[in-house]
Image 1: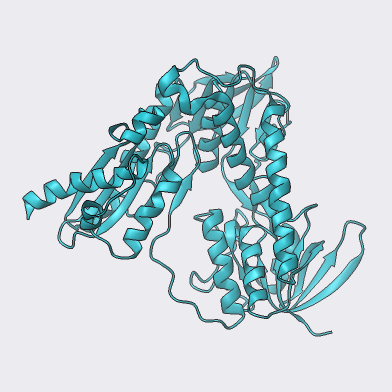
Image 2 (image 1 turned 90 degrees about the vertical axis):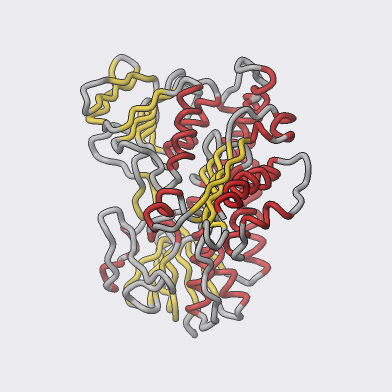
Length: 464
């Protein structure tokens, strides 16, 4: 039997995109996944579930309408876990169905097994019944994703102390919640439960959160969180977590104690690599199970074995994972690719949303490039008034000399959708004049781009 052209281990965003890309290039492709259903972490415990949960919470809580009707407004007065998971299961079923159809349409074969490398061109597969088989391949892609980091000293019990995967299985809404970890996942869950009017405390050992985002955006985000009653403890770590008298107690390194009904521990993730036998073929991982790759081709230290997605580390986004998988598949199949765009957008699906593309102000300042900033607050737009939006803003950063857009940063309603206008202008080399001279639909939140462009243009015109 001839070897398979490409074996993909894992069916998350990077694996799915790589498999379909290779199939479209006429290659034989097999996807191996040990999960009960295709889709990987993204579909079943990560991206899709948490974003579905967020959308359900915003709809049922009436969060988006509170600018008009007050903070006590709710669409549904008593929201239960069953209200939240009903939409979740329907969404997940649809995602799996779409993925299965994509594989079928492109002649991608899938196998439910645990995969282990035994040679650079050979895998052993073990199915649920313990049956073993062998698969020979020309190239392989590791796209196994990550799982929550679970330190031994943290008493995970699925009743009082949860990781981010387990939070999707919580049996009832907590009366109070403590979130340990101010990364993207911790911040998203903290603000989602806060939107349900659950009192939330967020603990982060570093003095800041989301340090890869423009500081002004993060400062406004923190202000909005505190304004609605969230407790944010920065610069102090969780020293210990104990369950006592029907509640969880988190002792902080500064001596304070936080008590709540439930603790979500969301401090980092680790690669799902233990069962892959990477040491056998000479592929090393770091202390969190992340695989080192060539940033251009996504090859590991074994040239015919690639890796993509969260298992290779930052930025750990579904969107970038898809592109990494596509690039890896093209390289493995000998297909040429144009150079990747210099910038791509980040999306943080907290409440409110944050999205950013290009350089933050701190980076521009360090570079020494003379720059100007334009700002538009959503409440300044007619669409913002119609929607009852009383917070959130768009920030644009321009090169003073070339007038080109260097960065676009948004906090507020619709940020992850709006950011693509800034992305297009940056990657096409557009300037402040694009925003000043073009017409935007009215009334829209996108009109904020014109307002921010004019804000910067007024000062740039005077300076020139």
